[in-house]
Image 1 (cartoon, rainbow over the protein chains, first blue to last red):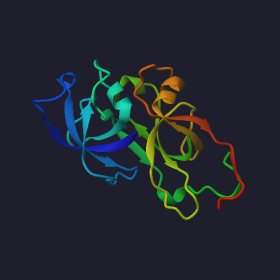
Image 2 (tube, each protein chain N blue to C red):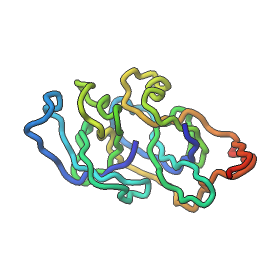
Image 3 (spheres, chains in turn yellow, green):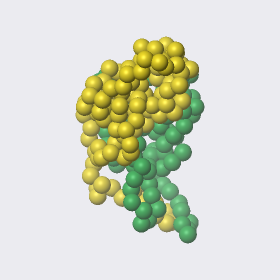
Image 4 (spheres, rainbow over the protein chains, first blue to last red):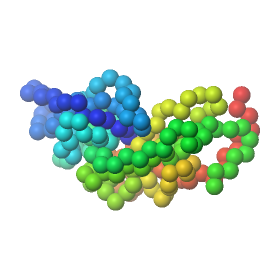
Amino acid sequence: MLFGRVRGTAVCTIKYPDLKGMKLLIVEPLNKHLEPTGPLQVAVDVVQAGPGDLCVMVRSREAALAMQEHKFVPVDLALIGIVDELTVRPDGEFDYTLKEGYTRYT
Amino acid sequence: MIIGKVTGTIVTTISHPHYKNRRLLVVQPLTLPGDPPEGDFVALDNTHAGVGDTVLVNREGNAARQTLNQPDGCVISVIVGIVDAVHVPALN
């Protein structure tokens, strides 16, 4: 699951029949600091997001499971939440390295 | 499964029904010394983890459906444990 910013919409008249009525959005995948991590992709919308919205997306088979009616559709990226508030601690605050030896975390 | 650190929280009022009443957290996977921290992702919380906790994350859909008890849940990453300690004898 990852962040994405809605950049636009896509319209397809000819498509797989079960995809009929699904809203296609152009999204830009982002990391936790909301920096782009790759090229633009197309996602199916199930939460009625609009251009500029920051969303949470789900990939692979689970994207198809996010659909309302048909669960066996050729979908590999779906928007499943609109982010209202995101709080991320700065990179220097935590140590992300796995150290040698015995490390207690709690 | 991977070990990561919870670095952020996400609030979504509009979300898929499978995500209702659960918290979404930002997880940064732990790296080897010298490697930059990258590959962060969003995970659904199943253990009441908080920011700063080191957690065990399952990144596979079937395991997520099983742990959340949703046969057709559209969740991939689920936090399934909070790590107390890690023992790494030698990295190289």
